[in-house]
Length: 339
Ligand code: KG4
Ligand code: ZN
Image 1 (cartoon, rainbow, N blue to C red):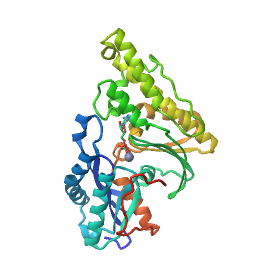
Image 2: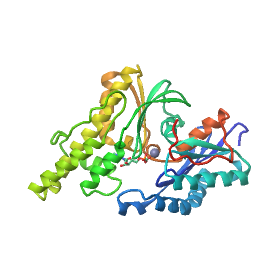
Image 3: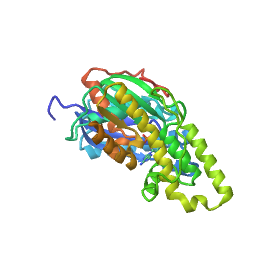
Image 4: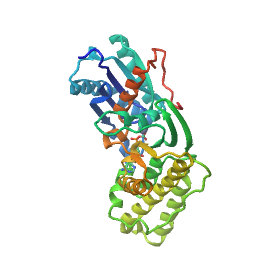
């Protein structure tokens, strides 16, 4: 081990994935994610079950991350963990585990904002170009839809956000109405490939400025399904591909309108995406065309770094370590943490 090398153990437990990662400086040595299948049968995350599953998963997940990284625990320089936002019971498991391990290893803990991490994940060194400041950060997940002016690693300002449902939540709730499993986002993405995106039209809620709304679309979608099903009980089965493609287009159109507005208004030519919905293949197709037409630089994380993962917590840990932004054992979870 060279003396300058920094080894960070990142821990993520904000929602329903237990994840641990090891970074050597800005490079990922391991990134282990234990998904919690228990929530599938309830059609959404059950907080009490999530925290119990984190408790049983956290030690084996950390052990796997250390083993895959081929390091020993006493090589670690610090432990970074998700302080928030997220579910209280879930956050407590990661926070308290990190503090206990840091105490026994006599190394610092570093608290991380989950939403900042979804953006700063792009600073992992995997041989590709890194975004340059300033840029528009767009976090799109099951819990958040935010547009952020990113001036520097830790200088971020929210330009707008959802007034109600997050975009991933809209995917999941519409999918639930179609009888798809949870989370429905990836399934809608897959089914839509075979459908006509212009077959059915749904309204886009009008919201001024950088904010966005999805709950009106969801209600219109439910009414649309109910109306058609009273006429034809087989409506969903017979039209599933076109229904999925059409609602997916609507949700992405709404997002793209705001991305365009905010990048133009703030004169930003770089747009950086994070969060589970950035895995959406139709969004990627739209962004490719949008960036070519407007000469923009677009960054979308690879799949393992777009949904919840500990590598993103590790890279923020590394950056904070370098800038001496360490925390201490008084650190506690913050379910509604903002920037
Ligand atoms: O970032 P994430 O793993 O967890 C948080 O919510 O923080 O995001 C999960 C969300 C879910 O709503 C899921 O349906 C959505 O991301 N998602 C997708 C796709 N993959 C995941 N939505 C649309 N298309 C996808 N391919
Ligand atoms: Zn997330």
